[in-house]
Length: 202
Ligand SMILES: Nc1ncnc2c1ncn2[C@@H]1O[C@H](COP(=O)(O)OP(=O)(O)O)[C@@H](O)[C@H]1O
Ligand SMILES: O=c1ccn([C@@H]2O[C@H](COP(=O)(O)O)[C@@H](O)[C@H]2O)c(=O)[nH]1
Image (cartoon, rainbow, N blue to C red; front, side, top):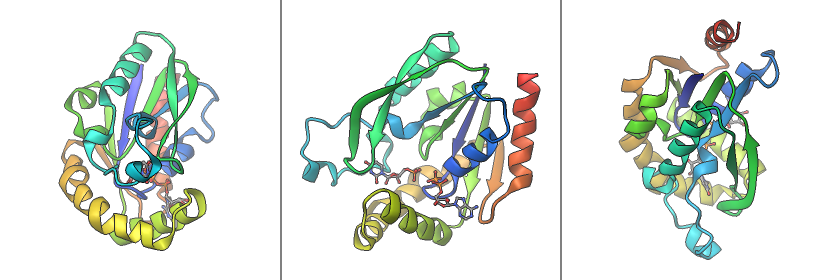
């Protein structure tokens, strides 16, 4: 199994890059694990308490479960990946039956901050987009897809997103094997990653 970790700040385009990689590859040969599925279960908290969580700090992620699931997949076993709701800020209670594949992609803002998880990646990719570009994308996406308003996104950006990005996410570039500049759509870089994956699949 080839395990590829794709990190980068919110709005840099990780999900988009993953979808571009999957596009045209044989269906069912590449599996996806999203860090978002592994936000801590906060069912014991009220909605008002959950909104106050710092979702950009590594402690908000259940890395133990993520690591355990990746080890299971590597061992050839199927896992039940939790489904997360950004609207409710909590796991939904549903899971996705995820099968091991020849290539597994793990994507998320904080996946390179965890040393044990980092060691499991054969290839570490960091997607870069400038912070103003990321903020613009995040504003548009969170308002249209995640039920936020402009004040909520901007206040979260100032209080947690920006400081957490500077403290935890940006320094992870140091560990990357490949950095994808993604201020604009980067077909060349995506094709390079596709070539690496195709070599593993053939
Ligand atoms: N290179 C790009 N240029 C312009 N918009 C982009 C680019 N990559 C992604 N987007 C858009 O930005 C938003 C955030 O992208 P997404 O892939 O969800 O980022 P991430 O998963 O890193 O948070 C989406 O609406 C997406 O369509
Ligand atoms: O309940 C939640 C959990 C996370 N977030 C925000 O999501 C981003 C990470 O997702 P990307 O798709 O990589 O942008 C993170 O910055 C958290 O602030 C949330 O809003 N609510």
